[in-house]
Image (cartoon, rainbow, N blue to C red; front, side, top):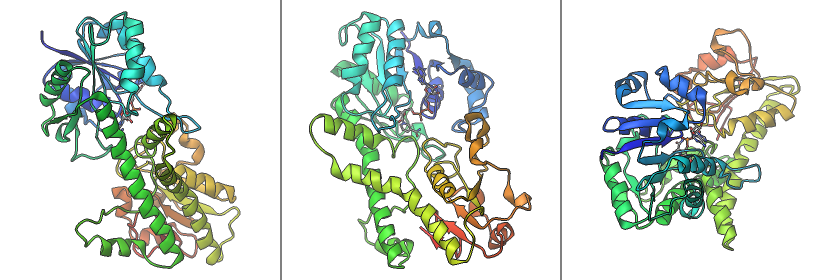
Length: 422
Ligand SMILES: NC(=O)c1ccc[n+]([C@@H]2O[C@H](COP(=O)([O-])OP(=O)(O)OC[C@H]3O[C@@H](n4cnc5c(N)ncnc54)[C@H](O)[C@@H]3O)[C@@H](O)[C@H]2O)c1
């Protein structure tokens, strides 16, 4: 039988994967969001991960649905639903549990369910499998099998796209593992790495992002130290990076759906098994504190140049969590805005990539149209995201936008002679 693949959750991860599989297989894309289904049926991906012409080129092999009846005759289910945290930084497994229940209701003998969502080790076999068993009435590793294959894509990155990134695979039995690995090998040009177990594959993903978070936290801490000493951190990093094994990272905000979230999955599990992960939690705290530092620094620079803070206007350039992409999930720019507002200033936000701001309620943060085309002047400008549009700004642009003395705060190291640079 030729495999018929169902992707559960058509977001940043699920859609590119669905499209990649649709080059070789019949694919059904399932999502609980009817608006996402409508948009994809109309041939557009608002996350901008898949271009319209690519969506249309695989149209004959892929159907989109929010109706569970349409996914019944699939034999491979790949789950790519969100894994957020709650207000107390604990894993929120509801989307994984709900989607497992959904799959369970359509599961048939010998089907395989592969999870791609980032989790802590044990979630697939200890939590998802029991939901699948309960709602299907089938027995794990007798009637159906599981796999785990973490996703490594990077939103907005047009070079490292899903098929060009080596993929870790795993399965619940040796046969299932081989089947999962063979499946991905058919579409992942970069190849696969078959891990020894599902737990090893789960752990490998969560530590990739934890390692990055901790390394960035170190660079952020160094930036805070050097700022007190009036030493340019970026110049220090350039010099240090001449050593072959220095890991070159830059200081900055750590937002988004992965690096700032996934370590909490690991710390949750670590604490559950009796270990307090001090280093990982300290890194989280340092990275989360960067927004306040930037806001305080902005206010100090304004005071230094004689600006009256209360009632002043600040322009925030960028609100997406990273450059050249519309993804605003868990963006730390919002924390800067909130901090600044506490000082009684008014903040306008301009982001040429974020055009659906209204739809998700971000309008309350004062999202504006291109400020270069208006006459409004600002007491300070914070360059928060390194979008290509902002890289093209000249000193004349900043001059035009400035109200009297020019104060540009540069978080991304893309401005010549800013008042302050992170
Ligand atoms: N975005 C990334 O760059 C990235 C990279 C690697 C791994 N991941 C991981 O992949 C997973 C998915 O992330 P994403 O960025 O694609 O999320 P997303 O929010 O972009 O997309 C998730 C989709 O799942 C749908 N969904 C939610 N609950 C559902 C359910 N019960 N049934 C069916 N559909 C449901 C949502 O409507 C949404 O369209 C997360 O675990 C994330 O940590 C993300």
